Image (cartoon, rainbow, N blue to C red):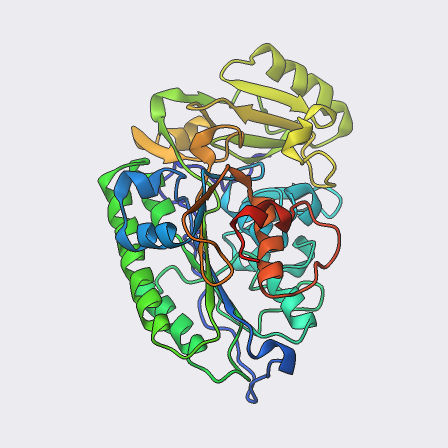
Length: 421
């Protein structure tokens, strides 16, 4: 059977993470306190601008982000893990692990052993800790006696390995940019005992407009400028506080490619419902055979039609995708070649003529995101080569003097040329 929820830019109703998981998370009546050793550490404020391309700052010139870049460190791109989608990449940014190691294989995927489907936009999945492997930054902080404040980050709504952020919010796309900035400033204004040294914020606006109108559109510029204005207020007001220092780490999960409805490939005849369960759409489809004997015939049918996409058996999925070792890896991966997309006729008919999407091979530079960092830990005016986003979480742990929770796929050492002694 076909999955009914497809994360692709071709459908207007499925943009980014624009779901609504309402109501704030409960806050303890007696606020927890930082361990003494954490009370005078410089803060880390990690901010994600979902869908911001590696070249968007140069293309649109948001003044506050450009100022931060001039005064700090940047890279020529932040390379996502495969698939270059919101959910796996935000969780990689939080854990330092690839998808096959942290378990979040996509915005949507299937666990054949459990017979369950992960749908990141739905609260039931977002809040279910069984899906999330590794230990995210806020979990490492909790185990070390450090407080954290997280405003909308993939994984932050779930209990993971017995941990949660000290304070977090259930996702609600109606919460304004200013409200999120206000909360960050409120956290920063607290006394050292109750002030979270780790603060994480998420903004979906650029991704939503990129899906709807395509990258480099006026609507994307407007969305980025609104976020930039909010960040400018954060930087100014935080700069007036008596803090031990603030290291800002600005990232995005992926970039965006321009796509057109005319380049969509209809997969209806190639994927009969009686043979397979299909999850996804757009840049790739995960195909799970309903019975093992269906795998080879379906694969051969797809292979004969291979045009504008590549098809792989699980064992042949490229090693650099870091996908095939997962128990939830698909029996067959259909990997679209940009600018082509994959879909079924029923919902392809509803697609915009021109739009944007992501999820493609991370070697495609359109998929690269941004990395900008500034603060007492960083040198001024340094530009690094394009970096894998697995390195970001180890960097944040280093900035906070927290231990790595186990073997990671990223290394803080790649930032050494940009860090002060």
